[in-house]
Length: 208
Length: 168
Image (cartoon, rainbow over all chains, first blue to last red):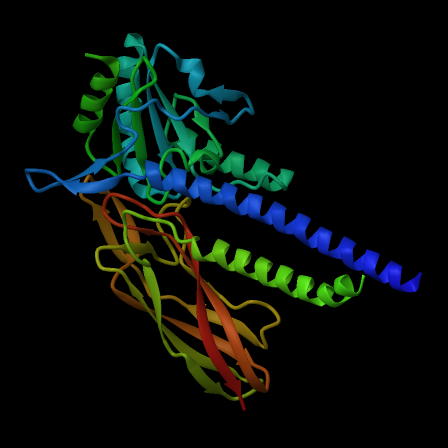
């Protein structure tokens, strides 16, 4: 009887280990798939004919990865809500100095082209802590304060880190994706470029 | 039943081995690709210091920043920018009494000559004042910083600063 109990305990222990191993394996595979997705979507700097580096994203010419994020008021905003419009998805962060230089350009261009069906979605890549309500509220307040300081009139969405993989990771900021009215990425920019280059890509997204 | 009894330790051992390899597999793939290659900041030295136990002692820590990159100084000009900070974890046998940071250099980005940033570039030192208990302490201190070049920024990062502190 005692031996049977011992064996049964042992078997249950092994089964528990295998169940845990199976779960760990599943988690690992899921993470590996996400890494693969990020790697596949990751762009690179390529030196063009004039000798200047250009960001080339594998997402160009493909459907923009769908997402749904919260804005600063807690309202869910999805990329799908902007179907039929040209959209600039701009990843930025409160701590990113180059982002603060390009934001006034984005504001100007958004106001200039809004009537033609253009919108900017400013996605904050600032870390947020969803497990701590007070911390989350403070972090949202800081992002909102920064957005106000920058006079951002377009929707500011939080938790960009949750959608970074399909957009190639957020290892560098700012990062912008220009999406046409059909939801296809027509251009991408990494880093601070120029207002003219942004405008040219916005026109491309609008089909002008 | 006999076979099961004798195979039990083997099964447990193989399970543990399988789990170990699974964990190792998970870690080996953790590196992420970045357009900006390599570490932005590297801790240079000292690797080991000997100080008087229980007394405040000065230790000068040397760091190197990757070519073409800068990190915010300890006192960046914009309130939202992340300052460079050095810390020593509690319970390490060593306490950080004070840290003196170098004065940063004012720079402007080519696209915005009006906005000044206060940064560190190339190499910099932090003069730390530490108090070590008697004994050998392998301290994993931390440097938190946020690095950029003239057009892109990398997310804030914390790197380990490993120092063997001997309190005598």
